[in-house]
Amino acid sequence: MEYDHVGETDPEVANMLSREVDRQRETLAMIASENHASPAVLEAQGSALTNKYAEGYPGERYYGGCEVVDEVEQLAIDRAKELWGAEYVNVQPHSGSQANMGVYLAVLDPGDTILSLDLTHGGHLSHGHPKNFAGQMYDVARYEVDPETGYVDYDALADQARDVEPDIIVSGYSAYPRQVDWTRIQELADEVGAYHMADIAHITGLVAAGEHPSPVGIADFVTGSTHKTIRAGRGGIIMSDAEYADAIDSAIIPGMQGGPLMHNIAGKAVGFGEALQPEFEEYATQTVRNASVLGERLSEHGLSLVSGGTDTHLVLVDLRKSHPDTTGKDVERALEDVGIVLNANTVPGETRSPFVASGIRAGTPALTTRGFDEAAMKEVADCIARIVEHTDDPDVKGEVAEDVQALCADYPLYE
Ligand SMILES: *Cc1c(COP(=O)(O)O)cnc(C)c1O
Image 1 (spheres, rainbow, N blue to C red):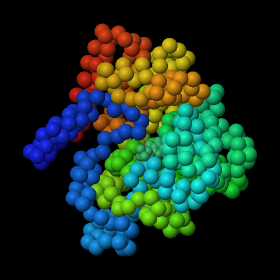
Image 2: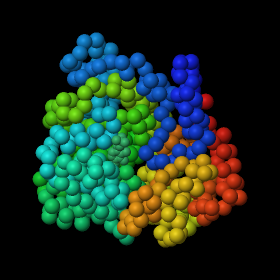
Image 3: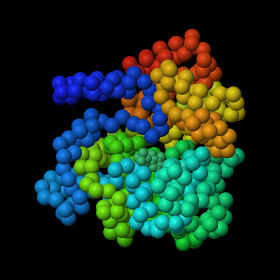
Image 4: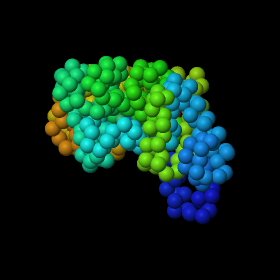
């Protein structure tokens, strides 16, 4: 990556940009929501389209000079429709949280009730955390996963929905390793007279590639981010049947945003174009396979996985059974010392604070982008298991750090 222009005018920032690329090259990114966008996506996102104001939608803008950005946005929409098979797509949400806000604004009134998964069980801030806009504007009831199995407890959810009578049920999660039964939740929503929003932020890429069942055409609304498994750069997306098009369009603008980020929408168009290539299916398949190998190997090392394994791109390790005195934060810090970057995560039935947490979440999207296969994932799992066992042992940490550097060299990034 060259930063010639910034380098000339602002060496201070140029230095930071280069150091961040080096950091990504020299560490293993295992935060499950992260990925490495292609140089083509990065270029589109860094383009002069950032200069353009384009409030409105293609063909109906409040500003002149939109003929080129109209084409860009329409292309992003058309490619998204092809990828996910939705009747209606809005590519303007600045991020996944804004996509969710757009749906809430389109169909809820302040004070209405959201029924969503508890945050410590794998939900997301924008599903109704008390300090998030969703928690402040709406009443929020939380459902949970079954503490024994780690799977969404659909029967308990049904009882709760009949009792609470929510206005919207939110499915789709941030730290849930299993497939979601969209149909079951939609049928429940229909029964209790609620909308159903499936938030596929984490699994947009897996759904596009057919590696996870799709909620499109089943759930009333499907929201997502565009920078996670789909690898199309920062942003959000909303999909639904055509009947909700006007409500969503006006919830986004004038409802909650001004001008769309046209440079990001160009990044989405490029990333979606990449995802339409046959290689992307291989990527998504390998991402899931890698997570499965990672989970199996960590289990062989005696670590306990929430739900016992994974169907997706991530595993959630519950440290309480194998290492009751080690926190998620301890492991996160020790792994960061050796060049493996992931996050401490709450686990179902969490007893520690979310900042400390009793679990770690590890995802394979970014490593799979670098070309990691099953054999390499096993090595990564071995590194993680050694650190969990020896969070404070400088000798072990030194050895693991060398292994990590060897893996980084074998699977180069942004050459
Ligand atoms: C990541 C995520 C989002 C989007 O978050 P942003 O950071 O706003 O893009 C939304 N919902 C879920 C379930 C997520 O995991």
